[in-house]
Image (cartoon, rainbow, N blue to C red; front, side):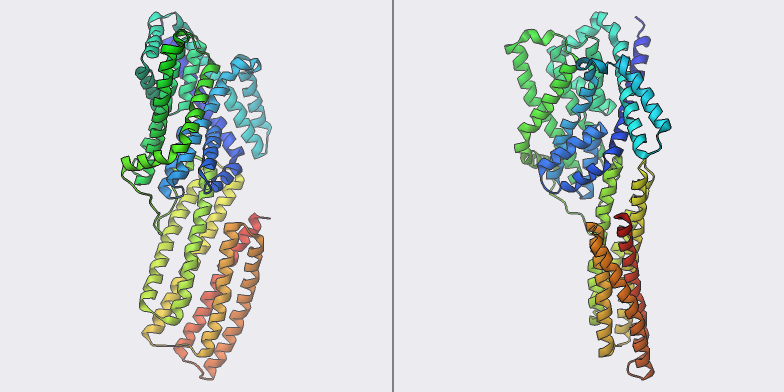
Amino acid sequence: MDYASIIIPFVGGLGMFIYGMQIMASGLENAAGNKMKKLLEALTRNKFLGVLLGAFITAVIQSSSATTVMVVGFVNAGIMNLTQAMGVIMGANVGTTITGWLVSSAEWAEFLNPTKLAPIAIILGVVVMLTGKRKSSKDMSSIIVGFGLLFVGISSMSSAVSPLKDVEAFCNLFVKLGGNPFLGILVGAGVTAIIQSSSASVGILQSLAAAGLVPFNAAIYIIMGQNIGTCVTAMLSSMGTKKNAKTAALMHLLFNIIGTVIFSVIAIAFFTIVNPAWSHGSITQTQISTVHTIFNITTTVLLFPISDWIIKLAKKIGRVHDETPKAGTVSLDDRMLQTPSIALQATISEVGRMGEVVKGTLVSAKDVLFTLNPEDIMKLKEDESLVDTLCSGVTEYAIKITSLQISEKEHTQAARLLQIVNDIERISDYCENISEYAEELAEKKLHFSDMGQAELKEMIEVCFDSYNYAIESFIEGDREKALKVVEKETKADDMEIQLRSKHIKRLTNNQCNTEAGIVFLDMLVCLERISDHARNIAEEVLEHSA
């Protein structure tokens, strides 16, 4: 037999299957981006919502491996705790069954027969791609073309291996896998680990089943092995991460191993005692999809109540405790870039956190200007350095997002975030300037007059309120608070002119120290600039929400 004529079309079909799966997932992801953002926000609520999120994202991106890699990134960044990660991991196992049903649909829905539908889907998708001008049309074309290529790939694989049903040695190999559960699980895990996709691995098994090559019992054990093999990607991804992230990957492995052990015992008992004859019958593509779905859903239902125990076991094996990200650590991870819409939402959250950090810096700046405490002055400078680190990390990450294949709206949003980060960082710089003014006053033992202090405190309150409203409007998407910023900034501009005029008169009348007076005037400029940057943030919010 000419094995080259089997291997080459099979490998080509596998490549087309994986490529079709990827471009279909890309189109689905772009179309469902906003929904994924909302689900990410819901993650903080409970584990069950995490299961729904994991199932949804995996169904969209067509890969439980990619979802769990992303989870490792979330945990490593400190955005997701291990309890939330456990929910998403369980959901990912459910979501990955979608691809199998797409493939098997050719059996239970005749109109989806690959030989009839795939060419039509591809040409239809290409027509939409060439004629559609809107972004939504491009996304739809990707979904349709990917759908068609997926079916062409599976059809090519099935046709390529069809001659093997007459090869006794090959058929005996699957009989042996069915008679040895451990070997069947090992093969399923090994193939999935090599190609880094359980969906593709299930597709390969279905193509062999379509050719009548796979006994029922062998398929069961291979499917369970595939669930273990898909953990390899996340385990590799966790290398070089924090211990908590390694624990998340270990949780995924433990969850699938426990599920496999439970179902292996049930399968062995069924094929040995209940219905031995069924084990030797050929399995269909639809039956593979059914078994795969039952296995993953049942495992999730059974293990959900004891998921906290799995987390504790993973922690014990990994010898870790929950970690809280340090204040100066940028809570973003490159693994999240696999799903740009979620990476963008994570960046928005991080910009909000950066804004909250600067809120505290402003409070410190207000106090230090009047207390002139050397330790507080030094702490303020350290806080500004911390903000610089955050700014650098967030900016670098946002730039990475802009280089990905994202929608025009998401690209605009990323650019908007870069501008807001710059405004927040500039406000932090002005806080450092305030610390320098305080240091100068302390060194020269200078003090503002009572009137000067009162005026400065009033100006500080207006400008700091402006910033607080700006950050709140950004985090909450609140137009009303953004409008308050504009109102406060206008007031700060008027106050700066009035207070400058009053202070110059005091200097002229020798009512205050000249050196302290110069610092006072510099402070007015500094505070007015803070309100200017706060207004910039508010205007971005107003423009985005218009």
